[in-house]
Structure formats: C-alpha cells, structure tokens
Image (cartoon, rainbow, N blue to C red; front, side, top):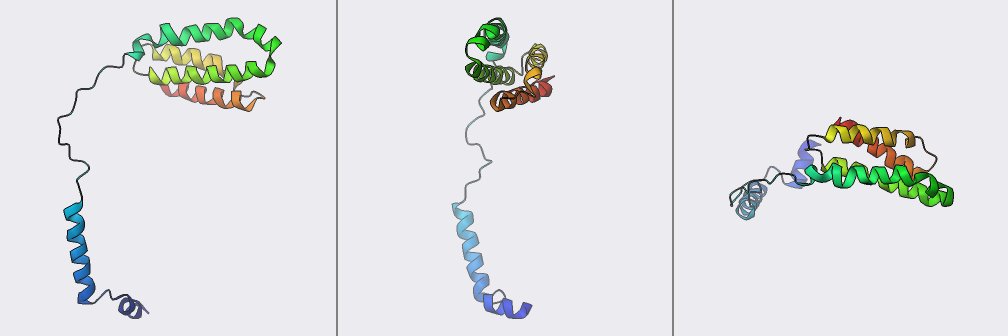
Amino acid sequence: PDGTAKALLGVGSTRSRKLLDTSDTKVLERTRRWGYRRTALQPSSPNLFAQHAASLFFFPLLRGIVEHWAPLQKRHPHHATVLRARAVHALACFLDCASSAPGSQALASHLLAFAWRDVRSEDAALRRAARGAALTALAWR
C-alpha cells in the first residue's frame, strides 16, 4: 500500500522533486525574515503611570467605594453590584498597569483584602471581577 500511495501521489518521481525545488526557491525569494530589524532599537521609556497609580487612581477609587457603598446599596442594590464589579475590575487593571512600581505589593494586598469578600458573591459579574482581581493581586504579591 505504501508504494501504491507514493505512485499515485508521484512522490518518488523526478517531476515532483523538480516542482518542490522550484516552489522552495520561489518561497525563499519572496519570504522576508521576520526577526531581522532594519532600524535601531529605540530605548524604552520608564512606566510613568506606576509613579502616580496609587495616589491618583487606586486609593481614591477604593476610598470612594468604601465610603459610598452603604447608601448606594440601600437605594439601588442591582446598580451597586454592577458598579462594585466595575470598580474592582478597574482596581485590578490599575494594579496590573502599575506592576513595576516599588509600592505595587501594597496595592496588591489592599486589592486582595477588598476583593476577597466578593469572591463568592451571588452576582456573577461581581464574582468574576473579584476572582480576577484576586488572581491579579496574588500574581503581584
């Protein structure tokens, strides 16, 4: 059966070898090397967001949610859980973007403490956001 398949496909013939050789040379002529850099590598710039993430974004958002959570939950319980889920997700994004900052471990511990109580929430969006935030915090601790 092997000889029959090779004969039907023409693998052993000189014609198939010539076709493969010409197609290989055509491919090699047209193919660019993707790993070859023609320009000089630009120097990387420092992460400027990491310097200001805690003072301008992370802690004000965390403080605002903690202070205004109880009245918001009483008035609009469904909107409060959606807002909390989005805020937890935003806090996790801030931590991820500021991972090179020296104080990112403090941000991670605050995020983990804040999001851990919602890991087993009834609301799916809040539960998913809390689990993602907890995983992000554990990755940077």
